[in-house]
Amino acid sequence: MITKSDNYKDINNLTHDFFLGFIKIHILYHAVEKKVYGLWLIEELSRHGYKISPGTLYPILHSLEKEKYLKCQKELVKGRIRKYYKTTEKGKRVLIEARKKIKELIKEVII
Image (cartoon, rainbow, N blue to C red; front, side, top):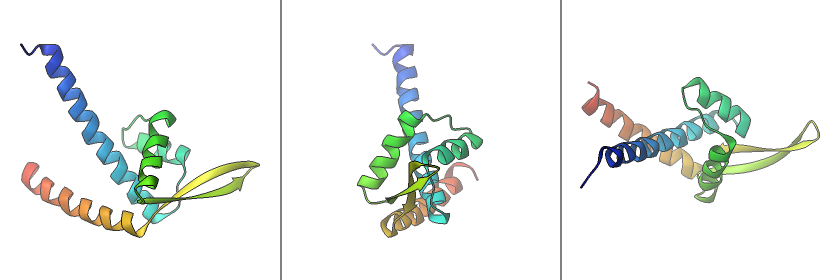
Protein backbone atom coordinates (compact mmCIF):
# COMPACT_ATOMS: atom_id res chain seq x y z
CA MET A 1 0.00 0.00 0.00
CA ILE A 2 1.39 3.39 -1.01
CA THR A 3 0.97 6.04 1.65
CA LYS A 4 0.92 9.81 1.50
CA SER A 5 4.33 9.73 3.15
CA ASP A 6 5.70 7.51 0.35
CA ASN A 7 4.43 9.94 -2.28
CA TYR A 8 6.03 12.83 -0.42
CA LYS A 9 9.37 10.97 -0.27
CA ASP A 10 9.18 10.18 -4.00
CA ILE A 11 8.44 13.80 -4.90
CA ASN A 12 11.13 15.02 -2.53
CA ASN A 13 13.73 12.64 -4.03
CA LEU A 14 12.76 13.62 -7.58
CA THR A 15 12.91 17.32 -6.74
CA HIS A 16 16.31 16.81 -5.10
CA ASP A 17 17.64 15.04 -8.21
CA PHE A 18 16.33 17.78 -10.53
CA PHE A 19 17.84 20.59 -8.50
CA LEU A 20 21.13 18.74 -8.13
CA GLY A 21 21.32 18.62 -11.93
CA PHE A 22 20.48 22.32 -12.18
CA ILE A 23 23.20 23.13 -9.66
CA LYS A 24 25.79 21.14 -11.62
CA ILE A 25 24.87 22.93 -14.83
CA HIS A 26 25.00 26.27 -13.03
CA ILE A 27 28.49 25.47 -11.70
CA LEU A 28 29.76 24.48 -15.16
CA TYR A 29 28.27 27.64 -16.64
CA HIS A 30 30.03 29.97 -14.20
CA ALA A 31 33.28 28.02 -14.30
CA VAL A 32 33.42 28.56 -18.08
CA GLU A 33 33.28 32.32 -17.59
CA LYS A 34 35.92 32.51 -14.86
CA LYS A 35 37.59 30.42 -12.19
CA VAL A 36 35.24 29.96 -9.23
CA TYR A 37 35.61 28.78 -5.64
CA GLY A 38 33.30 27.24 -3.07
CA LEU A 39 32.12 30.25 -1.05
CA TRP A 40 31.54 32.29 -4.20
CA LEU A 41 29.45 29.45 -5.64
CA ILE A 42 27.40 29.14 -2.44
CA GLU A 43 26.65 32.87 -2.57
CA GLU A 44 25.89 32.82 -6.30
CA LEU A 45 23.60 29.81 -6.02
CA SER A 46 21.78 31.40 -3.07
CA ARG A 47 21.00 34.42 -5.28
CA HIS A 48 19.09 31.96 -7.48
CA GLY A 49 17.21 30.37 -4.59
CA TYR A 50 19.47 27.37 -3.97
CA LYS A 51 20.33 27.08 -0.29
CA ILE A 52 23.37 24.83 -0.40
CA SER A 53 25.84 24.06 2.37
CA PRO A 54 29.56 23.41 1.99
CA GLY A 55 28.84 19.79 2.94
CA THR A 56 26.66 19.52 -0.16
CA LEU A 57 28.66 21.71 -2.54
CA TYR A 58 32.12 20.24 -2.11
CA PRO A 59 31.11 16.65 -2.92
CA ILE A 60 29.44 18.03 -6.08
CA LEU A 61 32.64 19.89 -7.03
CA HIS A 62 34.73 16.80 -6.33
CA SER A 63 32.46 14.59 -8.43
CA LEU A 64 32.57 17.08 -11.34
CA GLU A 65 36.35 17.13 -11.02
CA LYS A 66 36.53 13.32 -10.87
CA GLU A 67 34.42 13.11 -14.05
CA LYS A 68 36.86 15.59 -15.68
CA TYR A 69 34.18 18.31 -16.14
CA LEU A 70 36.12 20.66 -13.85
CA LYS A 71 39.78 21.13 -13.11
CA CYS A 72 41.06 22.42 -9.80
CA GLN A 73 43.86 24.89 -9.26
CA LYS A 74 45.12 25.76 -5.77
CA GLU A 75 46.22 29.30 -4.98
CA LEU A 76 47.46 31.01 -1.85
CA VAL A 77 44.98 33.73 -0.83
CA LYS A 78 45.53 35.72 2.38
CA GLY A 79 47.72 32.98 3.81
CA ARG A 80 45.28 30.16 3.01
CA ILE A 81 45.02 27.71 0.13
CA ARG A 82 41.93 28.30 -1.99
CA LYS A 83 40.76 25.84 -4.60
CA TYR A 84 39.60 27.43 -7.82
CA TYR A 85 37.61 25.47 -10.36
CA LYS A 86 37.45 25.96 -14.12
CA THR A 87 35.40 24.05 -16.69
CA THR A 88 37.41 21.65 -18.86
CA GLU A 89 36.87 21.07 -22.58
CA LYS A 90 34.85 17.97 -21.68
CA GLY A 91 32.78 20.07 -19.28
CA LYS A 92 32.19 22.68 -21.98
CA ARG A 93 30.91 19.99 -24.37
CA VAL A 94 28.56 18.65 -21.69
CA LEU A 95 27.32 22.17 -20.97
CA ILE A 96 26.60 22.76 -24.68
CA GLU A 97 24.58 19.53 -24.80
CA ALA A 98 22.77 20.40 -21.56
CA ARG A 99 21.77 23.78 -23.00
CA LYS A 100 20.32 22.07 -26.08
CA LYS A 101 18.32 19.69 -23.90
CA ILE A 102 17.12 22.54 -21.66
CA LYS A 103 15.91 24.54 -24.69
CA GLU A 104 14.11 21.46 -26.04
CA LEU A 105 12.50 20.81 -22.67
CA ILE A 106 11.39 24.43 -22.26
CA LYS A 107 9.71 24.32 -25.67
CA GLU A 108 7.77 21.23 -24.64
CA VAL A 109 6.96 22.04 -21.04
CA ILE A 110 6.71 25.83 -20.84
CA ILE A 111 5.73 27.17 -24.26
